[in-house]
Image 1 (spheres, rainbow, N blue to C red):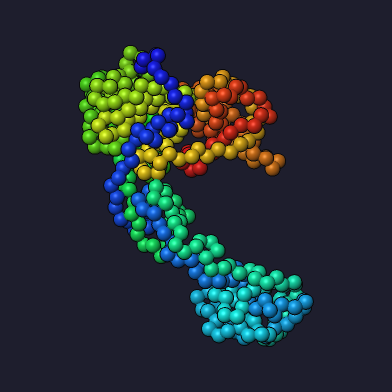
Image 2: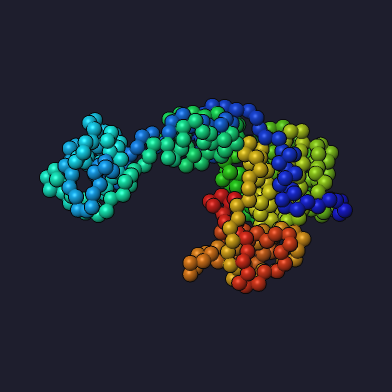
Length: 408
Ligand code: AMP
Ligand code: MG
């Protein structure tokens, strides 16, 4: 790579990619039981008020607020309103109705008193604790109002969102086609697992990790194996990937070593973006396109490959899948260790976030060398140190990006 090439900050890189990456536009209609991790290709409009009707938030008795008196006071139980079995009559003065959580508030009633603060003698119900008009009632439409947009096109369908679709009675939705992501490892030293290691060789670990990270993100994958540092073999594999997939990820071969061919190949067959992203680890990260296929060249060091995937590539793949540029979710914590850093790049140090003495605290996950595996194994968050940040001293507040299942 040209040593004088432009550099972009982390945020500039993501903004640039959000224009550069063209999202998949093909759409299909699928049942919501198949929709986890898919991206909505339509706005979803509420066709119903949620809750659909006033209902009880408690097990107890329902009454009219006009009957509330100084406690204790007594009303007559005239019937039952259980979930799915409404009380058909009207609650008149002096009356109350036994009600269960989710039961429809009958006509004439507007207040619920929980079982625990009531005494019962046959049908005589005595209310023992002060009652506030309207208490313990879930009002029609208080959660979601009819005719508003509840889920926008581009939304990733998670379990709670699928719950909402079902609540609205929506059985199927339009989603974008999943991106298909091809990947291969490069390097003469790499051996696939399953054979005894030869002298000076290592097992190819990145490919299994990239495959797993892509699956975490819900992407379709195409594993193209290990390819030697041979321009002809690399070219053949790259062109196959570009033909069959929406994106291709390689690991290794993108820095400035003699055997680093990937950048030249992308230049020859497509578009190599001539900028370096000011992040650490992973600044050799390469971006480009071959035809319509997006290209991401991860550094070979396993930790650098993982950090660049989570920090940049997974976000770019979300853009490809139709989710647009996602906000970076950060929280803050008190750092208990000294962290070495210089200003000028965004650093994704691996950390261990904990909640101690009612406060979020974070420690370093150990050596931050990117050749080792340990820091990614031990960590549960990135300690996100912005460009302007210098070294961190124990007790300083830092930004933290926790890993939620899939690192995000
Ligand atoms: P490279 O980016 O090709 O110069 O590789 C940098 C370092 O990462 C070297 O020590 C490689 O042996 C190692 N490496 C490259 N690819 C892989 C891989 N697929 N699995 C494990 N280590 C790798
Ligand atoms: Mg290599």
